[in-house]
Amino acid sequence: MPQHPFNPAWFVRKDLDGFFGLMIDNLIQLILIVSLCRELIHLPDEYIFGKILPHIGWQLILCLAGAPACPPNGS
View 1 (cartoon, rainbow, N blue to C red):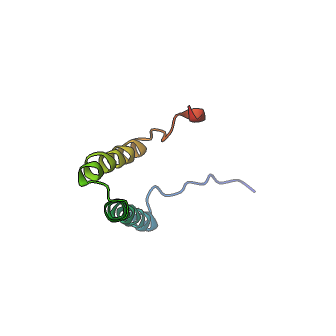
View 2 (cartoon, helix red, strand yellow):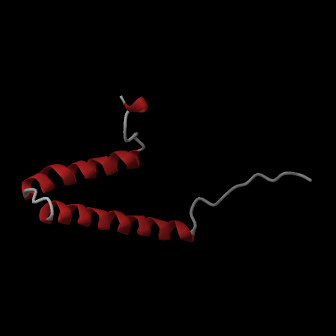
């Protein structure tokens, strides 16, 4: 019997559902980080909005660009 190559579609409807699900999940995590840092740990707003959130933003950009999150071998 001849083997047919498997060619999946590049985009299907469930991809859009997964994208919005992941986006909402990340948004909830950011809201949780800010609220816990402010109310539970009492970090100053300058530190949260000046250090933590910008670094999270850069990490998201680097991950979307395909850069590794950590150097290889943990060094």
